[in-house]
Image 1 (cartoon, chains in turn blue, orange):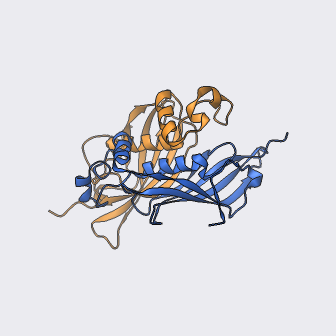
Image 2 (cartoon, rainbow over the protein chains, first blue to last red):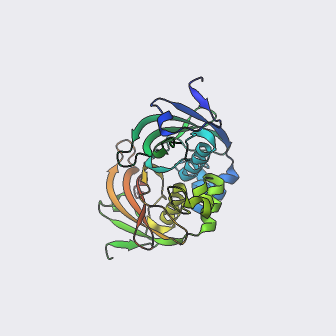
Image 3 (cartoon, rainbow over the protein chains, first blue to last red):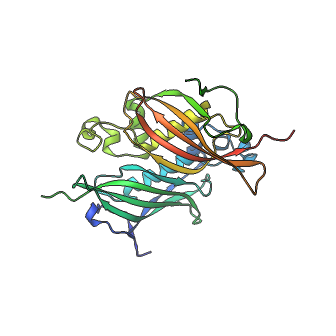
Length: 157
Length: 157
């Protein structure tokens, strides 16, 4: 898709961003071992830990913790998926998980700038709203994150 | 506080939940090593990895990734902080990080039921909205999560 900038070493300051701009991350291949390792530490529930027990739950099989999907999404964004000067600094946002993330999924993130608001009180920065969909290799959306990010203006030299 | 149920082995079904009910989790002690380990895997940005480099950023010192705070919050909820029958199964929600989480913070989660809506199409479950504040040992709120959770009704025996 020509309207999606591939990850590269160009970083965007506040004044470089426009509503409708899109970015695409690299990929992350998820397996059952990663799902269980994250779950043992942060979300030890049967549907994230054990294939057999997961089968009889709402998930009908092993699924990643939503917070694991969120963490992988962040890594893909930081690794060039959303190339912001100053890094990815979130104040908060909305998150949803329309479908489970499964062992064998190959995830990537497609992001779109949906709002750019310069700060009134801080002339060196602004707030940018980014809608990021995390998709698997079949094109299913497994997470939608609409995040408010703090983005610096280009420094005056 | 007498209106906050301490974590125990009582699990709540949909019909046991009322708007205004409150729950309090156990605690988690965070240190710099945990912050850096999580960041190396999921959020490798200087303000989560290196005290010296963090000093010159917006965070003015080492801070945990917001997704690390979210993951710790989930663990505290799963470990009895929000004792729901069927576990903590989130469809999505809103999240914000009003203050950074720091090395040395001792975190706990205070949750309040803010909505209980039985499903129209699925008589065996409902959607419960829970507002969970993650606080440090000084009483500062470091995360607010308003999550929509799927909660089963008590099975008919």
